[in-house]
Amino acid sequence: MASSLHLQDSSMPPSHPSQSPPHPKPSPHSLLFPNPSASAASPPASSSPKERVAGLRVAASAIGRLSDTDAVPVNPGPESGFPTGSGVYGVYDKEGELQFIGISRNVAASVRTHAKLLPQLCASVKVGLVDGDAPDRTVLTGAWKSWMEEHIAATGKVPPGNERGNNTWIQQPQKKPNLRLTPGRHVQLTVPLEDLIDRLVKEKEVVAFIKGTRTAPQCGFSQRVVGILESHGVDFECVDVLDEEYNPGLREKLKQYSNWPTFPQVFVKGELLGGCDIVSDMAEKGELAVLFKK
Image 1 (cartoon, rainbow, N blue to C red):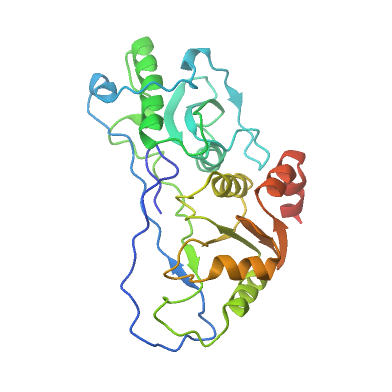
Image 2: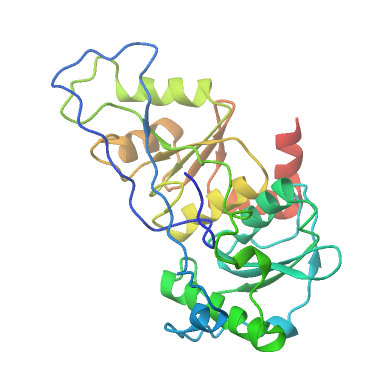
């Protein structure tokens, strides 16, 4: 997925390919079916600073003023110190000049991507978090506009990265699509679902079974786990346990397989690592970074 100009993540549903013909025989080498993800939308751009901030004006109570927020030096490593929550952020270069204002549902992952692709422009970052595990897109856009309006009022100009036609901050790596365990519920499986689960977690280094998709988690716990794994630079696979069309019966079967009653569930090298609480605790203690360095 080509990430948007201002939003790292999106609540837009994934598009679906045409259904498979009835009763095909799955190949033993292709039992997992990628699910294409959707493109995220971005706050509207316009040709003048005044137009850029006109229109939607939504108060974001948790967001402080841009000028009152401290800039934090960027560490491109997995332990960046930036939060994995949703919010607005401003990126500054080595001279302390504001280069870009963006919004993200995972600030840490966005900063990490910018630091990797644009190290010369990403020296420090100011962050304002929005209340709630999954704030409405309108609230995020309102927070972005409040910081943009403040910067324009102080300088008379839009940050270079937000100028129309500047695609420097748009080009970001495409996110992996979710994996599907079956070609569709209308297809009779020749391999038991439990065997498909077992094969998946043993063949893939890291697998996260979540509610929703990688780009649009459907619960706060799933969003947090995805954010933590992305902020640590982990190459992981996602499977949507709510997708009854392509993963029918997965929720109950996975509970039996792992002997773990809740979701999300993260597997590493074939073994259950745990759910949101365990993954979060390991991340805070630095144990997750050590685990993925091995």
